[in-house]
Length: 265
Image (cartoon, one colour):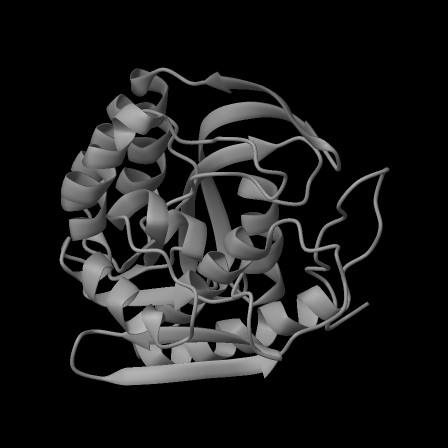
């Protein structure tokens, strides 16, 4: 009988189209050699054209799923994604506080199609309850603006963004610069306020990038579950997601997903 692989729990919403959310997380975790488990926070009716409906699960359902997994199976890393309301954010933050494992927080604010996935009333709870629980927080530039008011236009602005995110308490901030209007490549900044790592990759001419943020955060969580230091976990996650973006494929009539199975397909 073989030993189980590293155990990662994702706490996020379901994407019926399979490109983002829980579905993207579990594909990523499998591709990177870990065992993925899930707490579904919301169900979405979603396809390549956008989000057509969102149904949030009650707090007791979140608690029951989380406790069922953690109390019996255990976890070596947790990743959070879509938490659409202040009540859900605070419930999950409370659960994380009692869990001895690294946490990757992806503060999902809007979908790839521009659909809002986080209530404005929940922003303060993200800042004061969720981000302090994070080992690594992974906001994109839109989420940085939403949470801090910092608008990143130039690469140098990413330092200001990181400082603003770190002020809320995560140990590390990974500022994702994929939406930067300038520059030839996709640049991210990882920092804990003392160390600074600039992560660069070519920018692929491929519009099929649905699920990029979920995939990157899950890949970081997989690395942390394996015991990698944060900097190496993030570098390996960046390499994985860059390949997944390059292999992204058309699906439906809108924006297709990244290819989570690109290394074996």
